[in-house]
Image 1 (cartoon, rainbow, N blue to C red):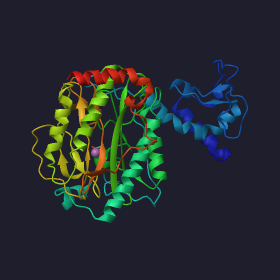
Image 2: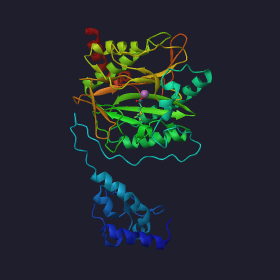
Image 3: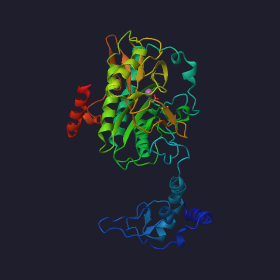
Image 4: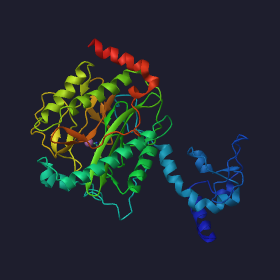
Length: 415
Ligand code: MF3
Ligand code: CO
């Protein structure tokens, strides 16, 4: 808590910046409903709140105090939230040509990890994953030892738990910024580092890709809207190993065409997974994905591929998700990689927002993705990021969607 002198100084300074110093304030005229007794925001004060901070009012905030005394006493601390509130309120999307209705919103400041016990990847401070360029695993898919496999299995398990946690937050009104912050805390509290954070400078801890966003959407202050679809992509670095998985889910009630795109995309990943066993060529996964989506007349994104994972976030092998690709190499027991097809309702081509991360469809139609971390075994594969009973149900697993599922199956059976 600041001393009284410090508080005075803070108020003085704020007076120079704006006209919102406490002494000029009148009692709030906004009526608070009788049932909803809002108490003073001053810690330890539970008197009813009558005075609204005028700066907060201006920027759409809602902090209230019981009166001048608590307002003044808390000014130093409280006013620290104003610059960000202002930036958020004054944010306007960059003037570029957007391909669909979605727009970027304010991105909150980067989260910092101070706990020295959290092992960080090489790019955590600099943004440059040097080991991805210099190590052999960047060029030749490694066969991992039993201990390494156990390490990647543990990382992928925490990744799954974090993805399941983040998916519980999907509902109208929640911002992707909130989902990012809570998922960040979830990962760090369990000893992990959120792999996307500062990877090539990525500003957040997870990727959230909504509607026409193909991948690498940056969590921001836009509240989710009923009818959206959202992909949450979670990656975790734990004790020297990465795990990576993602899923797409509806926000509230969504149109049938989006539901069909969700299941059609999910099925295309399943089709690729079925092939994972020793000697399968990496180029064959793209054939399976393309064949699976052909009946829907969807397209598969070409600019982003699946990848080897382990010591590196992204290493060999490279796994394209489209037919007639030229990927080299074949699966061997002990190899670990991610398959993550991005399926578009329309054109396969992608373009980018001004942030240079957010990849969207060129026609503004929706795109859906699912991803797993997969270990090739002697006989087939083990899903290191496998779903559990705790995982958010897909729409086709929910009884309330039985009519839509019947309609989906009818569509498939006619093909
Ligand atoms: N699963 C995503 C991928 O493999 C994770 C991207 S993290 C980012 O591309 F930092 F690159 F965005
Ligand atoms: Co990935």
